[in-house]
Image (tube, rainbow, N blue to C red; front, side, top):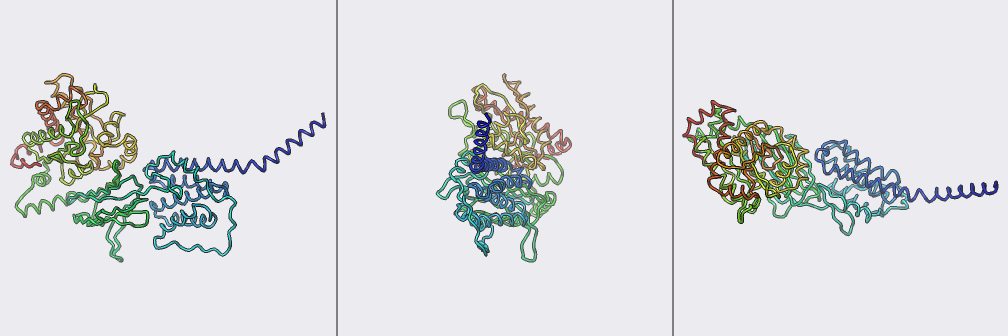
Length: 567
C-alpha cells in the first residue's frame, strides 16, 4: 500500500509539472481573447452613445480594457491588436478633448507597436495613424539598440474579424479588405444653409453615418483669424462635386467652407461675426449634421423694422413684433411631397402627400379669413423638402406658430382616430412608431436621438407647444363629433420629430386621421370633412391666442389691413 501511495503521488506531481508548462500558453491566449472581446463590447456601447462620448471617463474605461489585453501577455497574438485599439481611442479622445497628453499617449502607443511588433499588420496601421496625427509627415523614431522580437507577433486577424462582423457600430461600419480590418470611409456630399438676421441653420450632408467632433475657437487678431466654429468628420472624404465654399454674409456668419484636413478627416469651418448661442446635432437616413446658430432676436428685429420704415413698406410680421401683438405669422407645413409620398391610403391612388397639401391650403385660407394672420406654407405644390429644411424655413421667416399637417397610418387597418404631437421625449411605444415613420428612420435611431434630446430642447417652446396642442386636439374632436360618428380622441402626445427639432416658436404636428383606415380615408378625401377639420384647427388656434394674450388678439382682429399675405 505504501508503494502504491508513493507511485500515485509521483504520478500526480509529474502531471502537475507537465500542466504547468503547457497550460499557461493556451489559457493565457484564450484569456487575452476574452479580454479583447470585452473591450470591443465596451467600445461598441461607447460608439452607440453620443451622450457617453461627451465624458472622458467612458473613453478611459475602454482604453484600459484594451491595454489589459496587451499587459497580460505582451508577446501573445492579441497584444498588438489591443495596443493599437487603445492608441486609436486615445486619438479619438484627443479630437474631442484637445489635450496634448491624449495626443502624446496615442503617439507613444503607435511608436511602441512599430518598434515591438515589426511583423504585425498593425505596424502599418500604426504608421498610418501617426501620419494622420502629423499631416506633414511621420516623425522619425529614434532607436539606438535592437529590440528583441517577441515570439508571437502576428495577431489572429481572421478570428478578430469574425468577431467584429458580429458587432454593428453606430458610427463606423467595418468591412473586409486584403489588408485586414479597415473602417469604411464616408463621403461629405454637400453643404446647405438658411438664414435671417437672427438665425442661421447649416447642414452638412454625408453618404453614410460618421462620428464627428466640434470646437469653438476665439478670434485671434495676431494671425488675422476670426471667431470660428469647426466640425471634424472622422473617416471621411470630400466629395468631388461638393461646393467647398458657401458665402452666407448675414448678421451672424460670414461663410462656411469644407476641406480635406487629413487623409481621413474632413473639416468644415464656419467664420462667425457674432452669435448668442448654437446647437449641433445629427439626423439619419440619410446622415446629416445640423448646426443652428442664434443671435440677438430683439436687435435683429429692430434693425429690420428700421430698414422697412426707410423703404416705406412695413411687413406685418415685423410691425406685430414691435407692437407686441402676439401671434401674427403662422407657418403651415403640409408633410411629405415630391418623391416622398408619405403613407399610402386605403383607397387606390390616395397618398398622404396629396391629402395634406389640400388640407394645408384650406387651413391657410381659413386662418387668413378668420384670424387675420399672415400665413406662409412650406410648400404649395407637390415639392420635396427635407425635414430640417421645413423647420429652418419657419425659423428664418420669424414665424410665431408652426403647424405640420400629416395623416396617420398603422398596419392594423382597424386603427382610427385623431392625435396631436409636440416635441419631447416619447411617452409610449406608439408615439415612437409614429415618430419613426414620419422621420423616415428606425425606432432604434429614435432611441439614440432621445439620449441627446434634452440638450437640444433647452430653447424649445415646449410649454407653449403643449398648450397649443391641447387646444387644437380638443377642438378637432369636439367639433367633428357634431357631424360624424366614431371620432376617436387619441389625445395629445409627445415624441422626437425631426421636423420639430430646433423650432424657435410653439410647434405641433397634427395626425389628422388614419389614412390606412377605410372610413377615415374616405373622410380625408372628402371636401366637407376637410373643411370641418380645418375649421376645428382654427378654433383651437384662436383659443390658444386668447389664452396666451387675449388683449393682443382683439388688436389683431381690428387690424385687418395687415392680413392677406400668403405663400
